[in-house]
Length: 404
Ligand SMILES: *Cc1c(COP(=O)(O)O)cnc(C)c1O
Image (cartoon, rainbow, N blue to C red; front, side, top):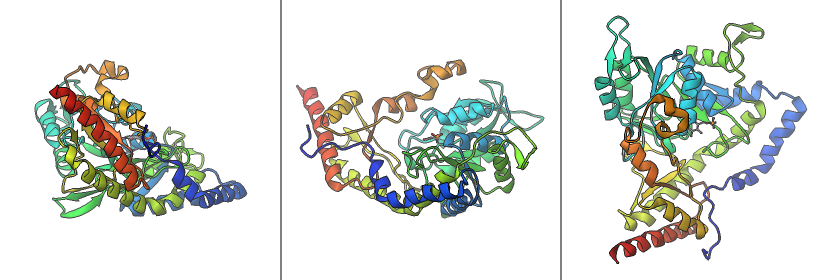
């Protein structure tokens, strides 16, 4: 056992204890007004999160999954169409595609960033798709379906390389919906526009999750869509609220997909701390970088391109013999995670899509080697030294075993 006690993979308790008075005050206010759905608290949070994301519109919804689904539907994805995304994301991304009536179609990721590889996207669009001569739409040869959108996932809190993705999407008439569920506040330097852009401000719309463990988390479920398109925002406002354009005027069939007022007010309290929390995560990532440098190449560190300012939702390394390393760290009191152990194209739920092992080798290899180390605001240098010392023992042991 470690001498310094256990180091959890994630500490969700401390920030809530620190903000307890403010958070309890939110409940008191809500109880006294009984405004539980909609109202000023939701509108205020939408305004504040919109400003944080440097977008024109923000619509609070029930979850990140709702956010992806509504964004796709509002941006014009139709039932029966095909939507491109990556195989190494949380299943909510592809569930939302299916819930919008479309079919997920995968393109592999870049081996250093774990995000959608623009070159592989190009290859897919140029060699596996054709242009319908009448409509000009992109058709997937594999499925015969119209490919209408692409969902780059800003995985682990680092944006995908958006310039080439946006350019390819425009050339092939695809709508771009950012899955920013892990990337609240991440930034991307657009070489094309020569400026830094916030995650969630680059596509036709973007989805955020406020699941408790995300960088900005509710005390329950929550999500939001950001967009610069007023019509898309208006359609999402209808979709989240039973298709109402105003009370009892149901222009379309919608969903019960609202952000409730207590969660909105809680999120607003926490949003004031998000920039500082993200800064602490970035600082912790820098310290891991220094502490782990000497363990390369046995421990492969996250790659941060010059155009990325990630917010380290997760700090993910790669190691040989991951299961053994994980077990040994656990025995030493260090919590870790795997995000995610199985790529989606190999999940039972997606058997019918017809993919096989070997179809997305980068995602498949990464899934066997990735390990998420403890990462949260307030993680101390001493805790990180313990984590890296224990990790060094795992790696050294293996090197020794190989040379016997
Ligand atoms: C968390 C997450 C979602 C879904 O968010 P929920 O709020 O849990 O519905 C979608 N995509 C990614 C990449 C996520 O990490």
